[in-house]
Image (tube, rainbow, N blue to C red; front, top):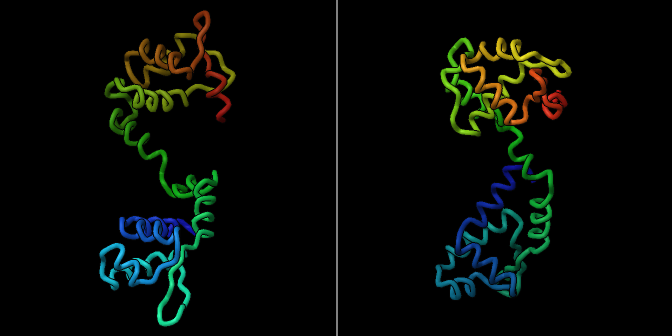
Amino acid sequence: MDNSGLLDFFKALADANRLKIIGLLAQESFTVEQLAAVLKLRPSTISHHLSRLSKVGLVSARAEGYYNLYQLETVMLEKMARRLLSKKTLPAIVADVDLEAYDRKVLADFSTPDGRLKTIPARRKKLMIVLRHIVKDFKPGIRYPEMQVNQILAEYHQDTATLRRELVGFGLLERERGEYWLAEKVGNKG
């Protein structure tokens, strides 16, 4: 079942009466007329709901005399539960989503066309996005004197002291005796 199959499955369950039908069929098999009486709905409405549930494999019918007897397909429920609990399913749903769109928006909002910062973001999440962008100018394994760090940071904003402090505070750069270098966790991301 692809993503559209997942969507169809949840759409089939996204109705209170269909959920009630599932609940009833989990206990025993019913005819359309029995379900209509129990749920106080028209048989045509019940048939519509059963059709939606049947299309996703949750309900099946077997002929018994003049009537169709509907039953819940618990195997399908179990299969869907296993699929949803799989570590691959939910991330695969967003495979075509641009996860960096928000980062680009934040950078665009806080930057001028030449890449300088209009202002340093006050909110931590936005500040982290800006700092992750800035830290790309630092190379792994190189120790930078504070003067060189200031030169790099001045390309982004005149308040180099705040940028230095935040880069260290967020764990993107490390500092010791006036030298700065890319934090190991950042340098290993390649």
